[in-house]
Length: 245
Image 1 (cartoon, one colour):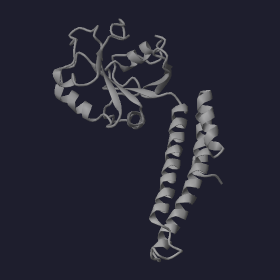
Image 2 (cartoon, rainbow, N blue to C red):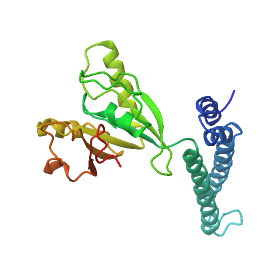
Image 3 (tube, rainbow, N blue to C red):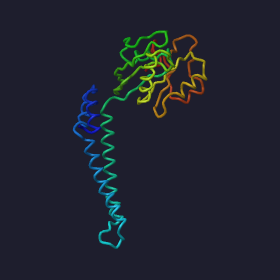
Image 4 (tube, rainbow, N blue to C red):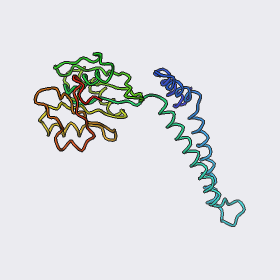
């Protein structure tokens, strides 16, 4: 029988892909977070008891606890809580690389970009046939000194088959849990209304960069339409390498 934080540590240990992630899992397994929360819980229970007991006595009674003394204890608890939050935040940063997820409509150019940002090898299948990517593909990505996790998922669409529906479920979870989104849009598109709908379906609260892709194709617009230029954006061609840097 283990508490929830240690159970999370077991899962983190199984999924660890680096020494940093392994250290983070060990920190949970040995009860670092549980011990901090336990001490805070006990202190809050004691403080609540003092508050409730002081309701039964006047300020002149010797048993009464002055409000100032309770405030001092509360201030100390606030400091301890901030330290616990800082410990957990630092552990979370150590647990793994930030996750960048490629999103967009089918055939937007996500798979070609996924390959280009890696070693250039064709890890993801690139095809003009929509819906080629169903499984989530993940690889390490090192832009400069940074270490990130790059994921390519199924394009945003309403699938009719069971594999399509499962791919959309996995993709939705990946989009919502991302640290950053690369929203890939085919620069040949002219359906601005549908583009606005696609943007509205992106998860709120997740930062993103608009990737105006496939500049090497005929009929490509060199820059996004005006209503998208408020986004952080970059225009590129994954095949020629233009704008990729």
